[in-house]
Length: 433
Ligand code: GUN
Ligand code: FE
Image (cartoon, rainbow, N blue to C red; front, top):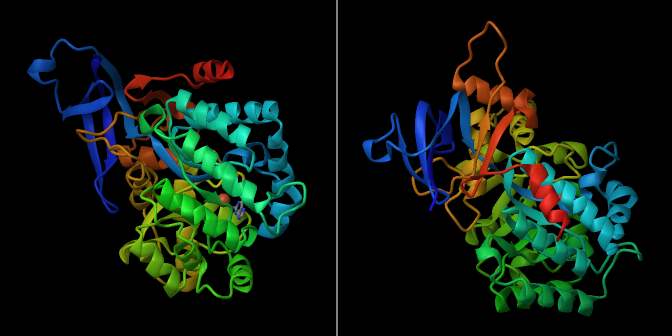
């Protein structure tokens, strides 16, 4: 049994609109869970150890609901291209390298270490088509303590001949992956089915994967209406389907009970909207990436108000920043540009974007994650050093400063499953896997 308290200024989302800020409060943690939050140490906890962080902020750890693990080492490269050229010139050659397990290991080690450094403890990953590298990554995530959705990606069409699967093998490898990775790590790491996007998947492949979604009760992670060019190509390839989301519904991919994670959703049609709401799919806003390689800004505010479930993603390597706090500031910035050009009220507040990155993203995982509240897992970050000399800042201003100007050096302590972690130590441990 472990029992301790942390003292700090606590910031956590109450709702899309509202932040809760509790100055100089105590958070009491038993066996990895938040047991109590109080202004002073309650009598019955008088003798427990207290980690006193003074005026530092304590916030929930971040959730990144869409990133490409193998693309970690290509971030910030090829950023002047549009989606299809970026895929063909940089991304497919990069991912093809993961047939080499030693290469995969070296990159996945760095990625996991750096996500932990930047405070992302919960994430939904794309990988590559290679079974062995995907299996290694699954086990690394399990050993790291992170909460994750991962799996093996599928692509059998419109892909280069050096990085493409034969349809039957893609389905068979996926079935083997789902079967071999069931019920591991207490469900902290789970498999999803990951058809890359409609243009790189045949109808036969999608229907085969749809059967697996039903058979293994598995969710799905893919890209949906991520650019006008993508949506147009998808309509041309799948004329018998009404929209991107309709393809996934009709091929059976939304029948499992796991989460249905759709990256981007920038130009949803009425058909997309119907499917996304019917299956409570999660639409992932990745503003850094959609600025870099595609076109458009998700209509976050309007979609939230109309009942979409939305979370944030870095979309590494389309996105070039590792920390979700950078995605928070980018979400606010892009929403203001959208509001400026469309002359509407799509502007997001910092509180809105923080909610998407913590409470909304955390809600996609199997446990109570993403808030500092009683009954939630204590996955949290201590932030400090955002203040200049001579000017006082409110806690909310310090959080905003962190999201705009901060980096991993401002994260003074990291608690994962109620234990303080050191990303370098995790790196050394995972090396031995
Ligand atoms: N669509 C298909 N593949 C990709 C990818 O790797 N990244 C992004 N952002 N979009 C994609
Ligand atoms: Fe992506």
